[in-house]
Image 1 (cartoon, helix red, strand yellow):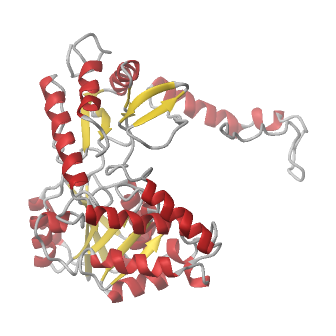
Image 2 (cartoon, rainbow, N blue to C red):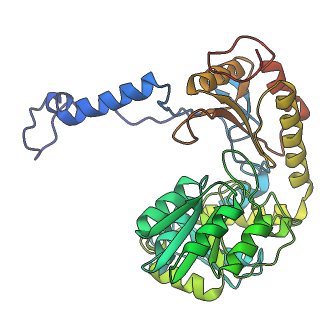
Length: 422
């Protein structure tokens, strides 16, 4: 079946809109339209305009785009489960039992026994008492930060935290202190200066652009010393780190029942959705106060069923975790041998930092010509001067797939501003 595209908008004016001429010219000539076109042109001039890439196949180690086949390094499908037959069968079974949607929020009976059981399983990953499902990891961070960081609270946020954490802090309308990335001395100083009644420290555990791990032992000790709540975003860690795929707390051998864990079903677990696990009073508070949970239609049964199957695979097949981490180390070595900066990566996220946005787009094009799909990441997602290609490894990649990156990036002229091989 061919891809479905939205039909072209009618040229007739919208009924009831003041000033509509019936030709569309009112909008085309408006200040609004002109301003948007000017801003888009400015993005073009800085090589920062974005567009959607649509494969015609699933999120496998190889994808097809416009009748060409590429090695796929842009997906967060770390364990290769998004197209696994067991997850697909579980999703189909959930649809057969409960339908395609729950059509309501959890508080309005938009729930199934699958939802309740999944929350219990996710809570158990870190010996928590309770868990709450959200429709996306982004919404989970919005819900936690906006609900918990109320009046009298001060938030201490890592400088490289994800946009969902930043936006959650903004919604909280409380004071936010940003500490330099992974700098525990700076964090301690800020906490010592604070006179806030309540303090929250929030950090990703695996950072999504550099692929490095937060210094969790020191982070946990610092939060405890200053009696601050600790919120950990485990989006890129669940399923990948820890002896049973529990996440980075177990990876470091830490017990932290007081930590508030935000995670996602949308990456290593191959489904969609987010969750927050914590002690029962925290989860009960979020159930009553987190607006992205209260006013949002709950996850469809298919996503919940697939997540159950994913947890089964994660527990039964630890070799997937070992393989994706080994492939990532292989790629880091290859990139550094080419003179590229792979940053502090220690996860399946491996950057090749090249400098300017133009340089990153040039490297992306070179990779594409060599049969490799890996996207350029540019400001504002990363700071100016650190544009990069971000490679995401999957357990289903082969050694030959990783070698294809080396072949496509053999020394040769790149765009001005590139700091890689020339």
